Image (tube, rainbow, N blue to C red; front, side, top):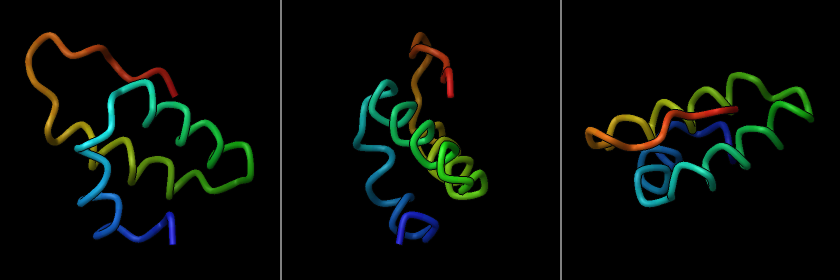
Length: 56
């Protein structure tokens, strides 16, 4: 479910950067690196100038 690009694309942009970073960290902790990258990428598509950079 968390690896689904369409789900990440719909929800990720509506989350704040720290929420996406926390989710990506959890996904990486359980070995789901691709899913983590999907969420960060989906979220970053909606980033505006001045948004904080992702840490996860």
